Amino acid sequence: QLAKTSINSPLKGWRQICTISIQQKIVDYTNENSIAKMGEDWKHITKIDLTDFISVLFISSFQKRRDRTSNWFSNDALLENVPIKKIMSGRKFHIILRFLHCCSLKNQPRQNDPSYDPVYKVAEIKDLLIDRFNKVFIPGKNLSLDETLIRAFGRIKFKVRIITKSARYGIKLYVITDAETAFVLGIIVYTGKTTYHDF
Image 1: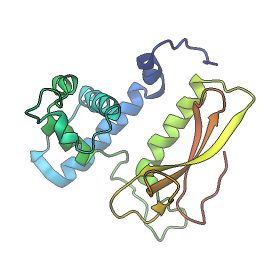
Image 2 (image 1 turned 30 degrees about the horizontal axis):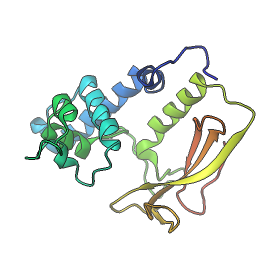
Image 3 (image 1 turned 90 degrees about the vertical axis):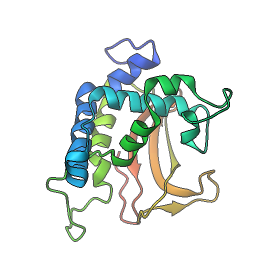
Image 4 (image 1 turned 45 degrees about the vertical axis):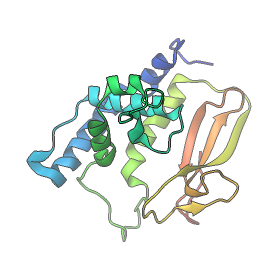
């Protein structure tokens, strides 16, 4: 059941979970990292830009297109995505996608540090979101623990191969949910044999 606040629409649910403070952290970290790489060429993004970016991700997830560019650039009226084109330009979307960051440049851990966390780049935001998951929802008596795979590309040391999943290669997650509603309550990222599961 919903905790404290009545959430009767997807938008209200999103606002309760991804709060303004969480969004602002992502905006600040993205600008900080991008300035370090691009200098004065980087144009600061705002919370509105981030909200638009996430809106595009939500809308495009329904279509399952392999090529995101076709949302903006298509000569076929049946293929172009009018709502997405109104939200944000394709160039701006891909710039944010390229430079999006969820951690600060300051005090980044080293791999030889005993407390090194392989997922430190998203750890802070992940923990904040999990905290919000548990504040806005009171689970029932039955919980479900399962593993899922997020498709991932690039050089990731803890990327795994699971032939039973449609993505095959990616980042494995252990997810605990409310069995009745499938609402997520906790997430552990599998980073190798040293991963401990402590929900």
